[in-house]
Amino acid sequence: MRVFACPTCHRLVTFESTRCLHCETALAFDPDAREIVARDARGRSCANDELAACNWLAPAAGALCDACALTRTRPADDDPAGLAVVPAAEAAKRRLLFELAELGLPVVSWRDREGGLAFDFLSSERERVTTGHADGVIVLDLAEADSARREQRRAELGEPYRTVLGHLRHEVGHYYQEILAPQDSPQRDACRKRFGDDRADYQAAIDRHYEAGPPADWPQRFVSAYATMHPWEDWAETFAHYLHIRDALQTASAHGLHVEGPDIATTDAAPLSADPVDAGDGADLHTLLDAWLPLTYALNAMNRSMGASDLYPFVISPAGEAKLALVHELVAGVPRPV
Image 1 (cartoon, one colour):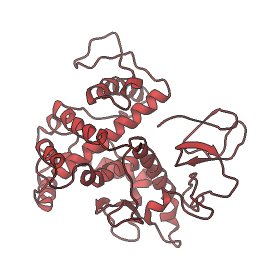
Image 2 (cartoon, helix red, strand yellow):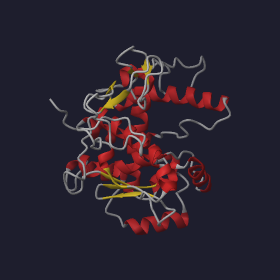
Image 3 (cartoon, helix red, strand yellow):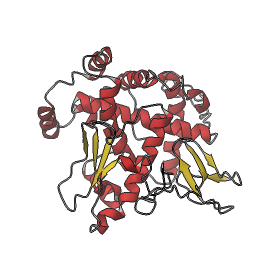
Image 4 (cartoon, one colour):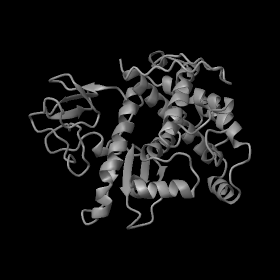
């Protein structure tokens, strides 16, 4: 995430800001300019500014902003518990969409074509909900937006990391595999060589995963235990990690966070002085990781100093690095607007 300044007093504000704490200017996020601006006097606040705590500008007065318009389903007005966690889910979605735009990845709405991107935010208090993706529709169980319930699930499943943004990054990875590596394309062939044959029976893979668990050597071949289930999940988990890395590096660069590293030799080959500024657009995967790994060492150590779990509780193996490299290659190959 880039940093943003108040357009009036030029003090630091956040991506979610609705008012400058210094000069009291009313603020909004302009999705076209991807900048924080003074709130439009023409009344272009998103129609979901209260329901979703949305600070994005809409195309016209009384309309939904581009982010909220992607939500196809939300809890009914008579579901106060479901509505209470919608702002958290929408906030994560706005961060996801900002990063996708920064990376130049195309977003076509379900309102514009069949199979376009859509979000169904559903309450498992009212119906059975499974977080997932199908044909462009990302379904999120809003229980994941409740921090206590999400932490309970994370502990029950023995997962090192579980966040709403993480879920959305994983599920949108499924959406982008069909765009970046269409069926019967050289890119899909490359995916099958790196991740495995996605034509393998998915239900059988699910049954096998939950019955036997991941293989013992999974850390040497996958970025997470869940990635072992099926090539589709391996791609989506790797894509999510790629988004984690790119967003965190942008944040570090924006804040001038540069890790020199300790005066102690490390066991990997990554230099501990890579600058996140050099890991932006045009950098290869090795350059990204050379900046990323020192950050994870330092930030994990900081979290432990506060008695918290690791910020990035994962190890990227050589096989995982090769998979990330393919994702990076495919994302970098997306045509950019002239």
